[in-house]
Length: 190
Ligand code: AMP
Image 1 (cartoon, rainbow, N blue to C red):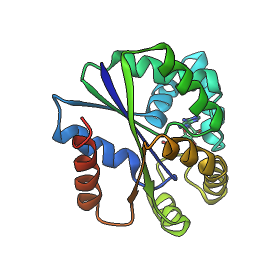
Image 2: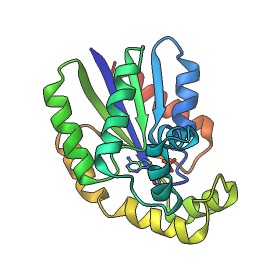
Image 3: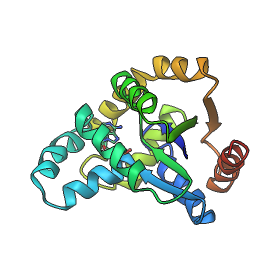
């Protein structure tokens, strides 16, 4: 049985960095995947699928459901550790529902918790525009991504808090503090 933790957060919330550090601290226990990184890896491969994905990423739009679900499914299957952390998923109500269906069909995966890294829009904007990772790190695309992040958030929060699976973590602290908190949270649930 694999135990699954999801990390959601605005662009610039630090969710991928946090999860990477937790994986590094627990290499035998935890495997981490960033949905954005998995999609960017497909783009980098130069495949036809990657070319399609690139158009969405460059505009800050959500990559279509079927592609994202396949990406997530493959990652969970590939993970060779008992605890799997995926960040950047779900980002829409339809993704959340598709995952729910997948979990009902697959009894080898248990969704333990959804951790939301909470930062204000102001902090998120400063971080994203400061890092300029790629074509999607400019003001216009940031605003679009923020809007797309916030729209389904209340429904996603409600869905998981009703199941007692939602945990919010203050992302406006030092990485050390955030990672300590997140790691403690995850370890208390496995
Ligand atoms: P991130 O690295 O998490 O900031 O994601 C970068 C980009 O990858 C997003 O702006 C989307 O275009 C795409 N992406 C990442 N996660 C998802 C997801 N769960 N669903 C759809 N598109 C995604």
